[in-house]
Each structure stands twice: as structure tokens, then as C-alpha cells.
Length: 213
Image (tube, rainbow, N blue to C red):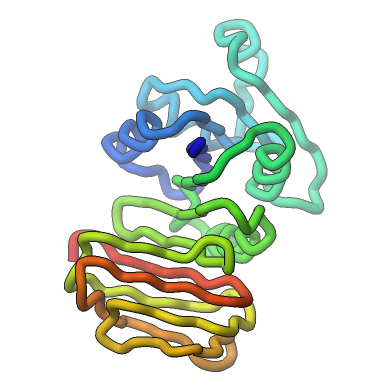
């Protein structure tokens, strides 16, 4: 049940959320400029991965923090998030992948992070987290079981064409649904019970749950 935290260079999380996620994780990866959010909180990752265009501290890190692995990947055909996921798949056995700093900031980065999550290992329980909302990827191998959120708003959006979408515990239940970006999806549904389950037989979904509402 290994847990990995990736800190990207998007809108930085609050220090409280960052510290909590670091404490809950077995491995912490700074993706390029995600290093800055960790150091601002006086925290260290296990590795820094990326093309280092937003990370200019390489020499200092090699000198002052020799235990931090630096993996410089120059390939400009892939985003730093893709590079980090590829490195993770080859080097660390993980079941849970939580991403901070993947939402907000530049819209093109935010959207590419969501689209690139399709390519990541479909057995990972992958989620994006920040102080405003939580986004969980759903694949045929990783159904969502959400506990203790009765009354919460939840939207279920497809990244690709999805078949066999099924829910339990929602106000407007989904029965063997077919979702697609150009077709049907479920926006602003409600958790009607304290345990909600959402699954799909084919494709990749995102479940978006606002915080503090």
C-alpha cells in the first residue's frame, strides 16, 4: 500500500495541506519547480524530476542535500508530469499517487495534467488535491469509494469515451452509463449517502469534489 506524493509547479498548496500529505506518503517527488513549495515549508523530497527549467538550484542541492536524487530529463516532447510518472513507474512500486500543485495557475498546464493522467499506470489510485477541491481518477481497475461525504456535490466527467459507468449512493444514480466529452456526463450530482461508489468498465473518468461546501 505504498503512497507517493508528487508536488508540481502549479498553484502551491497551503503549508498545512502539504505537510499533511508529506506525512501520509512513503515517497515524495518534486516535479521541477515543485521543489520551491517543499522548501518554503522546510521540507525535502526524495527526488527532483524534470527538465529543470524552473529549478535552478541543482548545484546547491547536490552540495547541501546529497540524499536528494536529481533526475534531469531534457525530452521536450513530454511534460515534466509525464516524465515524473514514467520515472515512478520504472523505479518505485506504488499504489496511491497524490498530486499537489497540479491544479490552478496556467490553464494549459492544468488541462494537460488532467489529460496526461490518462496515460499514467491505470492501477494507481491517482488523485489531484488542493485547498479548494479534490479530483480522483477512476479507471476500470480503480473504482472510487467515497466515505463520509453525504450531502457533498460531486461531478463525474469523462476524459475519453467511457462505458459501463455505474454509481451507488448518488442522488441521481448512473446505471450502465456511456459518458464522453462530447456526450453525456454528470455535473453537480449529490452524495446521498455516507458511502458512494463509482466505477466504469472502460475508459477514464474524473470525480471532482469541492471542499468546504
